[in-house]
Amino acid sequence: GVGSAYAIMANRIANRVAEMAESITFVERYPQQNGQILNEEPTEKKRPRKLEMRLDTGNDVSFSAPFLDNTLQKMLALQNRMLKSTADLSKQEGVDEKIIRESAAQSAELSRIIALICAEKARQGA
Image (cartoon, rainbow, N blue to C red; front, top):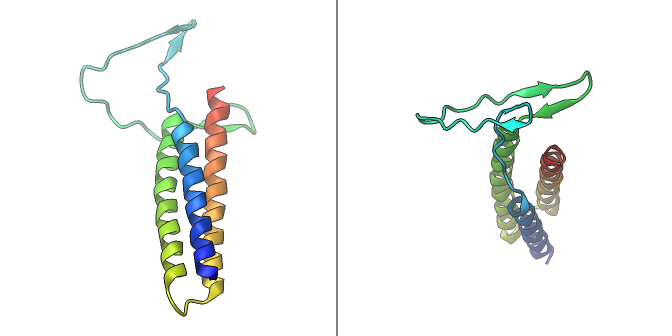
């Protein structure tokens, strides 16, 4: 019935987001000086980087690549949980259809946010 349609939609969204995530290449950028890439090999274990926001111009805000990677990873994990919850809800007897619909809508909204992050990563990589 209605529940299985939501489960199918949830699986399609999950697959599409997974494909998008797999097609993204995460590139480590090294500091540049006069067009030359400084490739400093760390002798000790890398310290965690700060998740900084870069304020280049007055209105232009860009986020560091590690911040976007970390955020994307967490959002994809959250979306997987949401999709599983929606699928589980849709299989339950006596669950109000509005609740299932709202759960699916939230997951779809998260998909759009994930797509925005992917687009921002692509823009910064260009």
